[in-house]
Image (cartoon, rainbow, N blue to C red; front, side, top):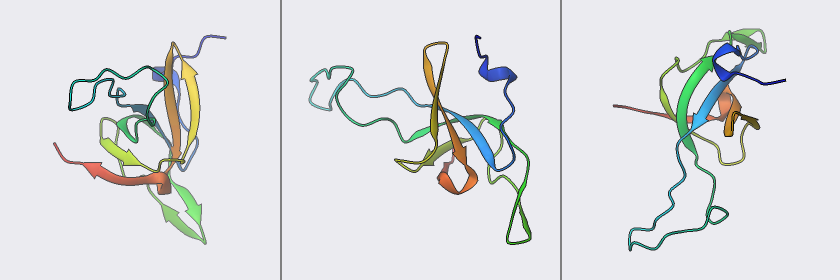
Length: 100
């Protein structure tokens, strides 16, 4: 089955993020191999699930589609679609919104 990220709606309490491209060159001009370095911790929100409830309180998504975010290094679940590795993140995995 071929998944299309544009047709996915995350479950309540989750967002789908397309990670930023990994840097392949250092500031000094050295090119890094694909397997070197850490995975990106920032990306663009492409889908948002509905509100969720915790301890009887409604928790609404802190971000909207199109927001640039920074998220926990080990947060979320990787899902590969069409050669791109997306991240399903819980609302609390998002650390910051990047202002344009």
